[in-house]
Length: 485
Image (cartoon, rainbow, N blue to C red; front, side, top):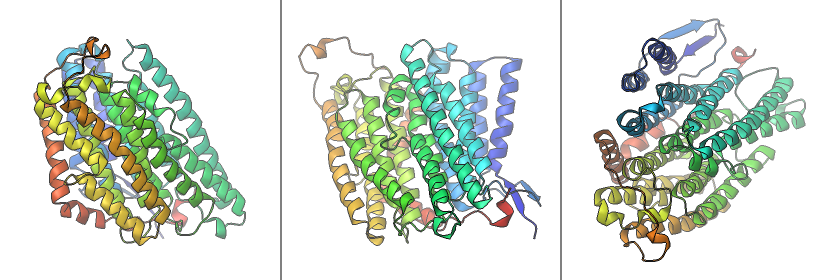
């Protein structure tokens, strides 16, 4: 029986587009031109996602799965990259041309890595996508080379990223030794000749993924990286990379019965609980807004793991909906920071924002309320959907922890809204020189407006996104014999 190898259209366009960008930089360096070219490549890759697969080969090793889950998560990755591209325009084109054309090439490569991971069904294709994303992120994190903390953040990411990649490779080696296959699929330990070897391999792969997802207790690098890098790159780390990795994690465990307790399931449950509580407690203690968003990102990974651990009629649908809701709100917050106060690192810098920039403050409040899960924002329905998935799977303990974590999160989300409402206090800290407030350029204003409207409309009318999520209920595992090396 012939096997089929698909190369997703988005991967094909992003590969070709990155080559065109490299050639354009080599021929004539122009930041504005290269920025426009990068945006065209991203838009083209988004446009071809649902088109018939252009490259289909028979009798070759399958590397990618052209299914609905791959298309949905790839679209989220590319849309997030487009939003990050728009946030970056002011610094790279309108004010600081020294940022360089390579920034947009690295952004395209990071998007390519995320798209590859979302559809990979082979260990090699997944790892190539992961490394493309990781190396591009390393370059983007270090791009602000005038600041010492950017280099420090990049080195921390490089060391821990290398460690997690080594764990993943060791896990793949153990599962290959057990199964003789490089399928990107967790082996069922109960059916393996050596159950301990299979379990150790899966646990190592899972641990490497948790490092990349910055789930507790593998989270210590995230706050430092977000603080040290630029705002658009912080959005990339907090959103784009998480979507690609979570999509791959769902596919990897599509063969495991998550109802049955075992070493892998127990580890995921423990990490979910620790992330929901630890991420929120980390965010509560922060005075830096980017470090607060790092804690928020960790907590939301824990919420997503509740949906992941709740197989049933709402499992993948609720996770897909939550990924979209989280991406919209988090990208919106970073877009507002980049457009209004790119140098406002501290929460106290945002005192009186409702008086100084009422529209931006209102949009920021909408995004924060969505992350907190307060109606009528899309975040409320997203959390409600995950709770429904947890109830259907009888995940009582996880739901109690989710409720407790969401309650804790109200403190720091509402605190920032209160800070924007209140006038600046008259203590000594308030008299330090405040960062300047800027007016977002027209593209960033359009992005903020679009994300704010989407946050409200998808919360009031979530049916279209829910229907899209229902098509993802079954994430098919990779084909059997054809995926062997």
